[in-house]
Length: 619
Image (cartoon, rainbow, N blue to C red; front, side, top):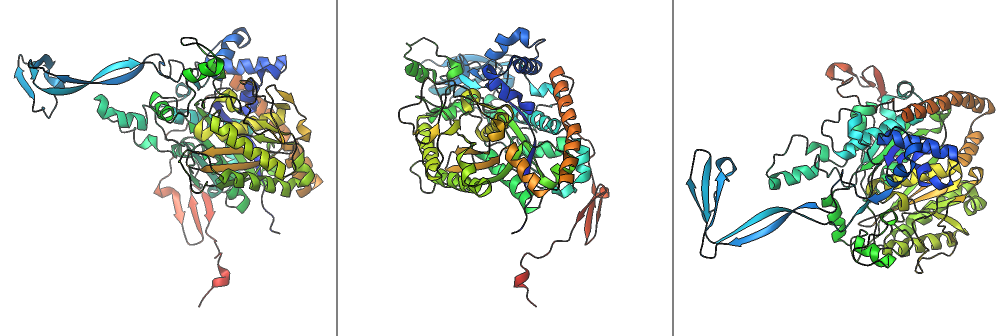
């Protein structure tokens, strides 16, 4: 059997509605009530720094109310008065419509029914006979009022020269920088250790950059009488998070790209990173996603599908009367009586090393990412409707886990990170898939975790939120409950599954694996397999000698110290995101090339590829 490299998780970072991902701060916010008083205090201080508050403990109530899923804040848009253009058809009814207008506002192409007379150097009089349609700027109440927003007061664009970047790219810079800091290893050391073409970056946004600084502004400009800027188009592409990481954070020359699969996009990119490391194409993989969909235009689209939880729907669930306000912090209710998902923003990054590199640099081992299985749904009745492809991805994932930890291992110490969107269809279909899969593999009381109840649904970044949550479980021994629900719905399959409304304790040393499940519009299904730190370390001990293991432990002591120092500085607010604009740019003069090597900036890339089709040689 060919020995493959093991993709080890050595760093992670990001930001979502629970705060900063690194050092498990976001996880600690979602499980705040189960944390020790000391851990609660540190979580509050971390959030206070993000939110621009002087003290976390003194502002505990404010911080808890202004994180996780909650009422959409005016920094995004006013849900009680969203800007709108009302169609206003008019008819002169025998008398002309008459008004004065500044010449600079006159259209280039004057409509045939207009009669225009100059009244001064600067103004004209317009008379319209017949029909004319106007668009009247107005406001209307938005039916969706909850979202998973970044902590109140946190503006990633103010932390570096963001130059009108779309919000998703601002979040990307923060998330990638956070992941770098979480390594506890200077990136220059990694770059010196790893050939320049063996660092991969796979990151994107399922929907691209759709706010006013990206595609949203580009599309709306003409209709709002504004000009399209030179940045609207190029910064709107869905793969731009990877491009930003390469160009402004890492300076990477390795493989790059973004694989899109709607809500499964993060796992699509993780699959590329895993494949690169297992095949030996790369020794480092930066994997991530950034999504900033809290705009009225995007949310209106999902609302038109009936996909989002509305105030009216929440009132009906809670037996409230018209005019009564439901608890918007409980808008997302996975596997319970529910009425739609809650949209969210998030940027998440995971750093993978191959096992040899992790051992050599003393990297902290958070677990291992071994496989991602992707299958479509086949023929469908509707593009957004559920299908059967997720049965295949889930079965393959559990079979892959069984192949590593064995029959006993798969039946204990595992958990299912459910997609758990909070929609009526999801609760039925996903619970049935999880239940039948568990039964097929002899798993009883399989813990099901649904972090969207805290964070909302961040579309392409959703699986990144789930992975972040999983790493927190393995570090802190807390299984998050689905705290926003009253009870599991009657139509949810519960055989072989274990749901809980309350947080539960677990022993990190007994944890074996997690499956990360993700389902996307169009029939995009992906399920990832992660191995716990305990299992990953046992595998590494089997591969490396006692001398190598002791060397890793000694090197890791310094890494742990640097990780703690990074966290302390982040809480103190003394570290800015890494953003290297116009820094170390290489040109033609920095490249040397012959038939055996290409040298870029002094770093050599071998050109020694052999034919993979050697058995098909011909004369």
